[in-house]
Image 1 (cartoon, rainbow, N blue to C red):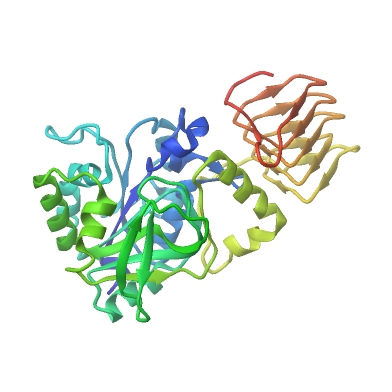
Image 2: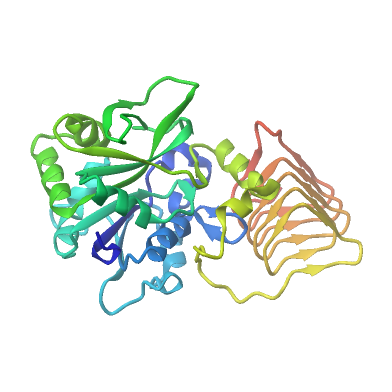
Length: 370
């Protein structure tokens, strides 16, 4: 199974409702992460690093910022005369419309999938932050002569719609699929990275549409456990699923605590849109400890255990602790920010005090003055 013969399909809007605070103005895929990235960067980088050269990005709504970030796909070497990246919005066909499920979304782009001339398809969401080698999954798929391979991670099951918990035998074959189980135990849950042949995907989607089926997990995966060879591939590398604003905050701040080295490595770089900003400027009285600082910032105050995106200004006497501060935000003189997520271009007035809690971070939306 050659990765050059694999079509990548990315769902950029899946689970938008789980983090509605941040997706009211953008898709899940364009949520900023780790100081300079967007969530879709990790999916695209995983695909490109393994050799996939044709990727379709399914969008639904609020995708202007996503299109601005992706551009022509040059940052991921997907700006090509042949193949490359294609953005797939709804209403792309006369018979297509605004989809309400994963099956409808795939049916809406079936013409694109059929004309790709690829033998295999890998489906992936944007709410999983990981840096893994897809070639390992492809080899596993081929060695087991699997019809469908689902990448999974052992851990606490995320609170997302359609979440799947897999029960496998010693060889990895899936014997049972539980959908949205109520459990607080460590379980093997799906990362929604799914590999299958293009022809099988076409057959399953067309069959589901003809029978008015709408739930991919139930009507495609669970329904065919007994009739198809479905295997689970356990991901041992770093992989975290964002299912809420709280999990976004926790996963982000864990990077500062040491997870950064687990996510990023030289062998599989994570690509993103390049911006030519000046280096960060540190004032004479600045004090920065245990933080991730992007380029273009101006820091005159104190920053501790936080993440600053590009172009953030921390004025004199201001203190930022345990917080995520996104691009272009200004923190005024003597202001205090603790346990908070400040979206892009927020203006915090001098001497203001913004404080949340570790288990309930305060969120301030884009372009808001407080």
